[in-house]
Image (tube, rainbow, N blue to C red; front, top):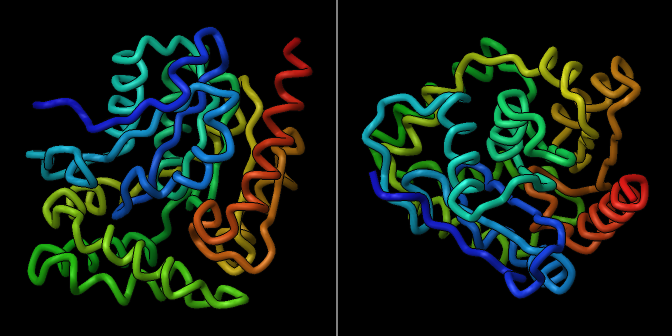
Length: 263
């Protein structure tokens, strides 16, 4: 199968730390443009598209599960010769980071996990199954309004129309069969115990308007004091795009502290 579409920014900074960004389901690598503008002057950056998303070819598999997410993330890192990186992922992209770090923890200096369900429930599994069936029967256009409302419907202030339009375009351009493969493969998982065993710094970041995930992250941080928790007030499911200044400032501080402590 052809390799995943990826872009490297800041490649001229040989020897500087790598940042690897992983997208949410139904978005593409342009989701991270605000972060590239902020960090490409100081880091090497790798972004890649999930299968059937953006510029990546569709998957022939019926199920794309956590093992597939991990394998693809590690493969794109290998292809660029990345021995070790800071990983930043949102939603399913955050789960790719957890799964890959559980398999090869020495490849990751830290994880920045943004707005991801750490464990599925019967309700979330049913929702994924419903959306997979809808994509298969009616195409991604049938999911656009539903997804935008799920991601941004409670944001305060409301997400800008330009942002909703840009994200809506990403959703509609996603390959329906590939979307269904991820939605099917990720219906049953639990990463809560995995987080406790990872031998590296982990930060949980959530938009406060994505209320269920914000509550889940807060509860997990109480159980595991080693986890760092950061909430972005008013933002929804994609705070890196919706509140990039706050997101970038938090990420910048985290990276600076990690690099100082490592030095």
